[in-house]
Image 1: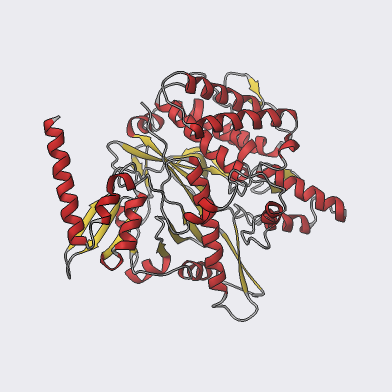
Image 2: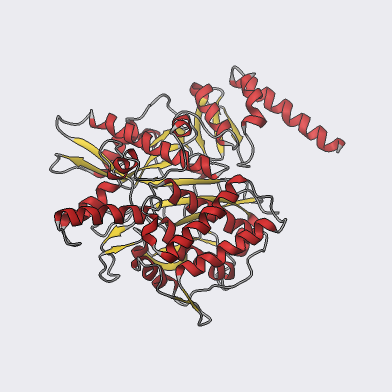
Amino acid sequence: MSLEKIAGLEQEYAIQVEQARYFDPVEMSYLVVDSFNREHQIIWDYVKETPLADARGFSERGDEIQISQKENYKVNNLLGNGARLYVDHAHPEFSTAECRNVYDLIAFDKAGELIMNMASEGASQRLPAGQEIRIYKNNTDHKGNTYGTHENYLVQTSMYDRLFPALNQPPELILKHLVPFLVTRQIFCGAGKVGSENRTGPVDYQISQRADFFESVVGGQTTFCRPIVNSRDEPHADRRYFRRLHVIAGDANLTEFSTFLKIGTMQLILRMLEDGFLKESLELDQPVQAMVNVSHDITCRKPVKLLDGRQFSPVEIQRRFMEAAEDYCASGMVEPDDSMLCVLKEWRSVLDDLAEDPDRLYRKIDWVVKKWLIERLRAKKNLPWRDPRVKRIDIQYHDINREKGLYYILEREGQVERIFEDDKLIHYFLKHPPSDTRAFFRSRCITQYTDQVLMANWDVITFKTGRSVHKVIPLQDPRKGTEAHVGDLLDNSPDIRTLFENLEDRQHASAMERVKG
């Protein structure tokens, strides 16, 4: 049986300082991270970080992370909702807490936008008069620089090992299924971009912000020679049972429908892979070039060549995956919940519209919404595609300021369809974690025992129990540590000494139950 695909999102944001002749993006990122709700001295546990480990059995060359406690605190801000706000290279970045369902993840991602916006407003107040920090949720500065929107999915170790065999063996599951899915899914989750970059050939407008920057099929790196499938082996869980599939081939989405389909369809694909349900090989002839070709074709009709000589449009390739998912949900191998059924319904509907006329999706899908907006403004001012003002419109679409960002102006005017009727769940996640993953326990510990927590990571919390004595609590299963598991225990543990005693009592009771069983 496949695992539930607990998921998370990591978003690097672009930063700009208005009315500043020069600014250091790293220092400004530090300022943004430091300006949001600093309530504790908890640091990030880098000992658990292994970003250079590759799933194919080796490690990339590089230095281990060495950082002082002062610098650690400057770079990281662990939030009470279970998320992480931090500096990554020259960008402020927001990583959501682990979410069990797609609706929570969409809302948490949106809460991240609000958090980043509040942080930038606080940082702006610390700048000279007249200067203001602006934050953009996109993937390119249109000057050849790209930054990531990364997805993370919980997968079984047995499936992960089949995805990434040793270097001398072809990664068949990746080539036959995962790569063709990722290359073509951009037709409903691309964020749209004016022009092209990275010497991929001229184009007025394209589907994806990231497609121009992929240069390999499989690899462990994320900042150079970017792969369509990332092989970083950093589980953030008990690696004997769980692995984290780190997906970097996605765009920064603002429409809730694009994020819904991006996450929801990927969860279905991974469950089908784990259960061995996908049979048909759709291996592409030239995957990297196909990534660019699909993005550069806003009709979504130009054929993509498969390794066996067949040719399908990206819509037809996606339809084959969608029909397989429909069969899977009807097979009895999985019990589909309401979110899975809704993903299937929207997946089919969006593919039907893309096949007929992509412009039908001008209220739902990011790249079509942005294209509709730009074409309306181009016509009004008689602007050619290469006019600098058109690229400026492109960037302003991604401004997360609710009053100034073009996407949010459209949303406020009712021009964009939403998944949520209101912002209630989004505002809930500003301060609260999901209740049904280990993020609940991590968040409660950070907020309830603030002065006793020394450091934390996704899968471990270290408590201060004395001057030089520390107590480590591992969080090795993302499915545990939920409100149902530990809510009453935390409610009845006013201090960490009581918490440790109650945890030991519960572990002892569980062990006795297993013996009796």
